[in-house]
Length: 342
Image (cartoon, rainbow, N blue to C red; front, side):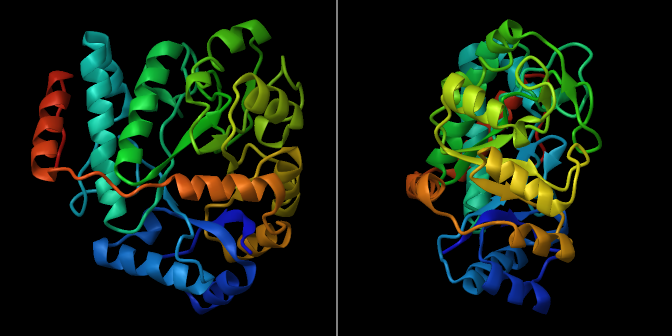
């Protein structure tokens, strides 16, 4: 039975220590970063090797492939995709074209991923940025209103799903208002509850049906004055599960980020106790991987049921003429006043 965590690896191949770790620790999934990527053949072999060591052919393999600043598969081996703000700019000119471009872009990203055996993309974002917020979200966001963000995010989710890749909704219940980068320090948001509900949380509500979601390492003082969403049972239960209505697999953001305090074991226990189904650890540092695994139980109960439903939700990709689709996508993005490199 898999354990309730997703792991990274240190490089483009699995080391002997990592092989033993995968066989004994049994992570639910693997997340890939640029350090794990050389070329398509190597990535495909790494993924196949990971699943063989785990003994589960359906073990999820995740990646952050958004476009813009955040894409782990890069030229010249893979196409470059635009940042989220580009779709927002197109949407402001024509909502239909903005949504169409987002859906088609996600279909193309999914085609890139599915060809390698990657089954989950940590996309879309539903974060709504505000003036003065840290640029960690910045041009990754699809707009500055909940309705526009939700519309484009939903189109991304539809495109990924059509391409045979599961989407991950992030960063629940919102990172757009944060004035610090949670990779480095803990952001504290002091907006009142009504403002949060009508803006930050509102963008996520139309997306509550998505199969997977990721928490934000952000404190919302109006909800829980002390703990970030990742380790706050109040935020996870009252906001993410009840108010927003998210019913899918809830994973933490990366537990090694600077926003969180305590040992990796403490962070892992706190996130799972708060209501995360799965702990995410990304940096591939072996001692940290071991500490996370040692503090993760086997998946069971509702967490197991959610993970099983998520895996079952992935469908075979729809047929698509990739040459024609890439030409059409380039035309759409050019309409937004930018270009796409292939």
